[in-house]
Image (cartoon, rainbow, N blue to C red; front, side, top):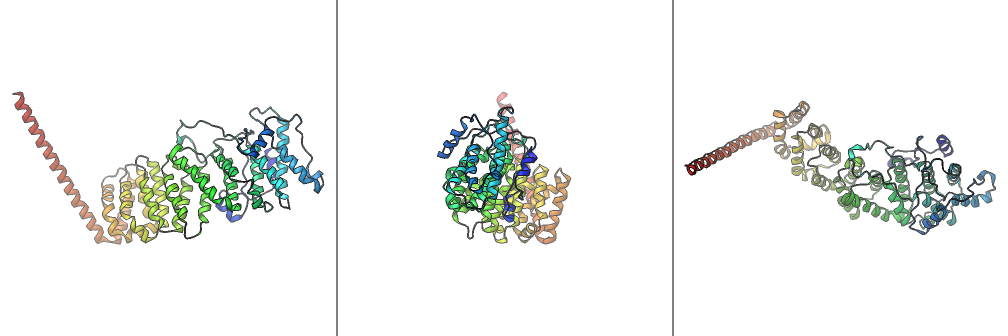
Length: 487
């Protein structure tokens, strides 16, 4: 049956990301799982269109039968039939019981597929009545209360972010077709943006954004593509969409730290940031400082880190002066007790330094390499190893050797400690390689720093011995006084 659904959908090229979607100018078609049975939840009426839709879902008509195919009616009757089919699909079924309304569900599914075909093949502009009916049907089916799976008390590590079907919404067989219809309608050249913006308005966009919290990866992928199409087509909505996404991020960062769609929203923003004109507006720079950098704070960073890095690097590539702001922001949120998160920060740091210019690099050397020095000495071998891997990057290696007179005094103590006593052999070997890079670049400066470290180490040992001697003397005096008192 699922194969029949896919066969009836017109073939379109799909893409895994919005960025490739833009390059190819193709639609992103979701994949329907062959193991899912469908359900549609109740709609959440907040607008007039929702109220109309809800009135159609309160009760299922006594007679719910298929309407004639578009092929069987004349061209003049197709529009009327299209409206009737849309109204028919405003009825929302409950699929919690697979044996309930089986025939009606099948009729609705086939009708939805016919609607997708019609929207894809139409050759004249959609009029206002048609646009209103399409958005009403979409609202009735998509805008619903999302299931609460109560994951609050479970560890984030339990969930595999690469598992696309950790949760499969049982409503998907119908929802997927409705999403496909909305996607094709928004992307259609026959959709007039000035007319459609009255119905795909701020309220409609907010409800779409609410759905990004869906547990189902497939739904979020469709929403990502549709939102990007809306952003591209309806220029008047762009500031509102950015502000609404910001509010979702603020709530996530500072309130809940729970949201399923952060990665997908960042993918949308990555494409938006890529299109920012230069010079960057202050509004966009504030977004970087107030949203993207604080997004490093939540403990679930691993769920969206790849997308976040892309967005941050886009800013640095567009304005090299932002490298200082970004790196200082990373240092501010640098994890103290989470080694796996620290490895992610080091990986991101490498990507940022890769696009950092020498002038900006020089500004952040002291705080940056104090942090890197701590990572080099980490007892967690993956953290130390990842920090040492920074010198495998040719651009970073050149930046550090050019500024060796400032960097060496900061990191030599960490390198020497690793060479003498780190428990992991791989870390010791990588440390030797880094020492050789600096030694070959400037033997004299390197030796001076090593000698200075040895002198400081000797002074530290003498200070420790002196301190211990003082404590021993105080202990002896205290013992003597105690003995005198006892006598």
